[in-house]
Image 1 (cartoon, rainbow, N blue to C red):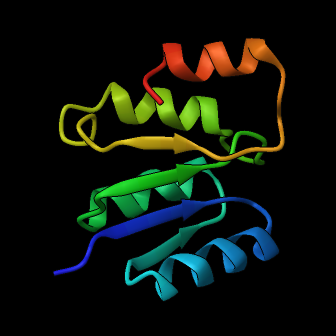
Image 2 (cartoon, rainbow, N blue to C red):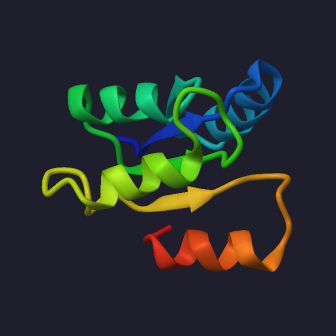
Amino acid sequence: MSTKILVTDDSKMNRMIAGGILEKAGYQVVFAEDGAEAISVLKADKIDVVLMDIQMPVMDGFEATKAIKNDETLKHIPIIIVTAVSDKESLKNALAIGA
């Protein structure tokens, strides 16, 4: 059984690029357009790893990561932040909340 990765990004282009690369590497890929949708997917499916963008509408990556890490049934899932945001404060924040 292959690893299932949730790609969460509001950019369809970014989702398709990441998904294509991951699928070619043999991973199963599912997608979410924002943090709220990511949480719904995580509650409905067995996901092994989350790739999470930061800047998204509805629920951004910081909010979604906090919600996931505060949920007893989801907090064990690793979250990797993938974003164009490059300031050190955002990096520190992402690490502090469990990414």
